[in-house]
Image: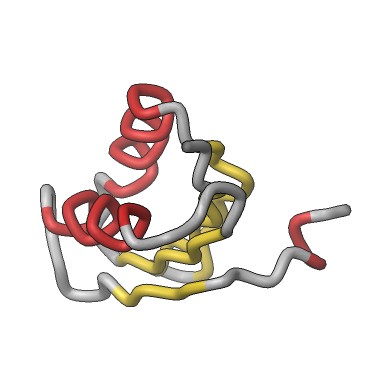
Length: 81
């Protein structure tokens, strides 16, 4: 399965929020999800890419996809536990 075919179970919009709020909102959303579900998060915070990579590495959740369209970052994260 490619990331183009992965349908998120939940999406959150963090446009206009800056560090640490995109990670805070991601953590809150993931906490309400079931293991294996996928969260889509969008953000225009320039630090989002580094923050999400660090957060997923630290927490064990799987960062499935990172892409950028203009100034907006798109992330797909699978809940690990």
